Length: 262
Ligand code: 5RP
Image (cartoon, rainbow, N blue to C red):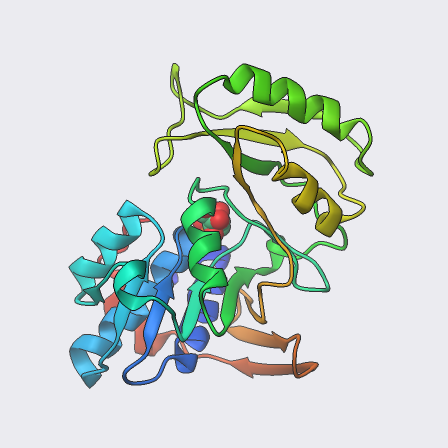
């Protein structure tokens, strides 16, 4: 079964498999959104069903909530949990300081709230997500629908004074209509090419009326678990300053491949 997985899916799987080692009995766990996070949720579900792992999960999107319930994880709201032991999520890009761009899957608002409310954020990624400078991936900005065209113009005006390469902005679409987030908002993607100062940009973006949140995660991620297509896994801990490498076996995961949905 594992032979059917592409190298990129194997990389996502091994990163997810290694990351769930951080989850312990009794923990409240933030559950990320996206294809890599979906692997992690399946791995956690297997531990719940087969090893009796006792955890409660706070999902970061409706699709993650549905998957978590399907695999047997008890789902609670952030208001019930209040604070989390750990959040495990994917990312669209990460740099050497473990700053992130997130929101490619449109869930950046809940993802940022949940990750910020966690003792520790672990990002799971494949090699394609690592960059020297953030910005090649369009930066998602969640805006309220009211006056979104004005907000888009204000964003473009603000970008003139920012250290970025490109300044094009586009409304994210879902077919013929604007993409709508779980919170009923729109997303404007900023095509910046390169972001010189992620911290400054993250702060300035959130000053613009109509902006709800942006996809820059600065000083939020603690650990990146980087998967490779051949089963190697590299774990970088920014607080400890450590890098560990390891190799995982695909065979133990075969039952997870059969219900692959993402
Ligand atoms: C969703 C996200 C995802 O974590 C990000 O888009 C990565 O997704 P994938 O694991 O599918 O590459 O930020 O809002």
